[in-house]
Length: 203
Image (cartoon, rainbow, N blue to C red; front, side, top):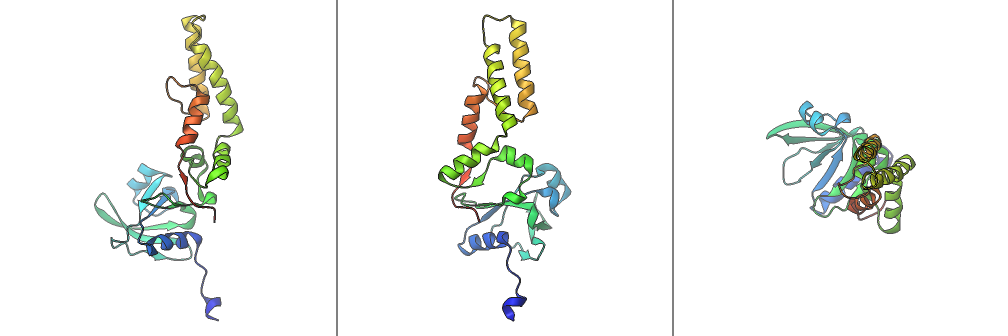
């Protein structure tokens, strides 16, 4: 009877409480547009609000069937906040980076740019490879060619500048960032290597 009346804990609550039980500081990444937070915090951080639930501070951490409540300090002032389950998409150990990503909650544009995932080994490599869409991969190839043309001394200055401008336009369209002096293909590999691959596994 008691078990039937006890609601199962949400997996995000389980992840946070497991870290606190080990005397760790949970670090959460939040879509602030779905959370109850100060308006200036929402505007500044958008879909990438990072909060640390340091158990050494009085947060008044609460749980309900909709999400998590806590009193957090922003700019030195305490604010009563609420984070619905679908606003939380990363829960990790602040010190080690170990933790989980809740893919179903990750905003699409964050998936394309944050490139963070709780995976290891080959599974992590496969996941990272999926983060660049087929359209972006095709754009990378075109940008590579255009960047080669932009450096070709046999072309006129105007032709080289035109190739560079087209490469830049394609990169912006597909949210592809590449460092000056590196080809987009090389830069893509550099970006893959810099992604945060957190230890652990899917839940």
